[in-house]
Image (cartoon, rainbow, N blue to C red; front, side, top):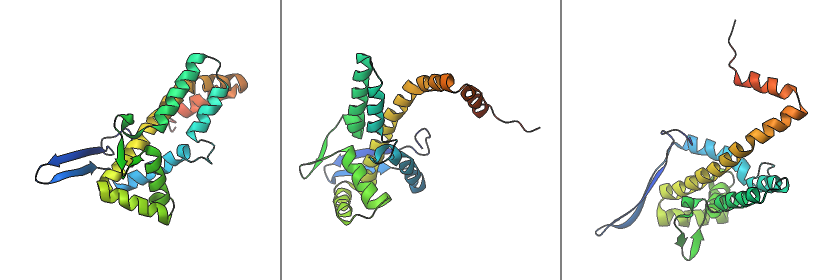
Length: 185
């Protein structure tokens, strides 16, 4: 969903003098949205061992270079402010619409739980923007946050592979088997 055109998302804020202001969005099929959010939640939920801010903290504890520590701070800020890449701020009734708020409302009122209070807040958000645009904001937040996760993954993958090669000599052979396709005889 993150890489394919079929799963791409688009949002528009439109205005015409006769019609006023309205919000539109193009979204992938709901099955793809739910599948993506099911995978993403492991990085978002605080009780998960893969909670991204906790992972950044662990990496920071094992980092001695000031440049690397500063980079981790930048990644944390990007994670916290991922709605529209923090290029625009949106408020509804003087309450900022943030990626954390969107994830909290959608996860707790729609996708994973049935919290009545969160459902009321989500309903207000949908009324103000449209259901599709509210979901577009959710997906934009999750996509942008996923990009940060992937950047960290790409940054530390070589270090982790190297560590496991040293501590487990069979690791490299196992990785080679996993990477090479099996050809039936």
